[in-house]
Image 1 (cartoon, rainbow, N blue to C red):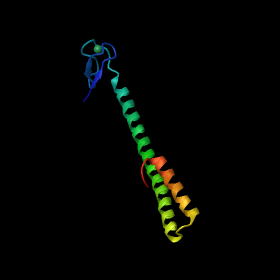
Image 2 (cartoon, protein in one colour):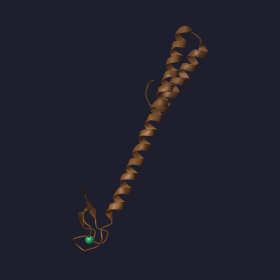
Image 3 (tube, protein in one colour):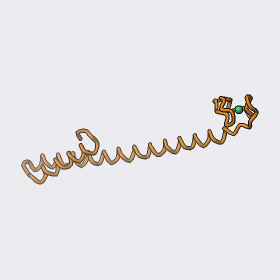
Length: 100
Ligand SMILES: [Zn+2]
């Protein structure tokens, strides 16, 4: 049970009440509260989807950098490999504001 606002007198009334005890106006709060619930659910689903997508992308970027570090060990002193690693690291830092 929750309290809702009467659309006529703005008094707080029970959402179970059919009419407002203060002014007698018909309570139409119920469909409105369902709409709110749906809005919250949709927003939540969107947020969950968004955060999974970003972490997946972040993991891929991190993996690319780690693979590059492995290549750097295989080819020490190779300027192309070293340059690629620095680029990947800078890109990661710019994107996620932390070290990979
Ligand atoms: Zn009222």
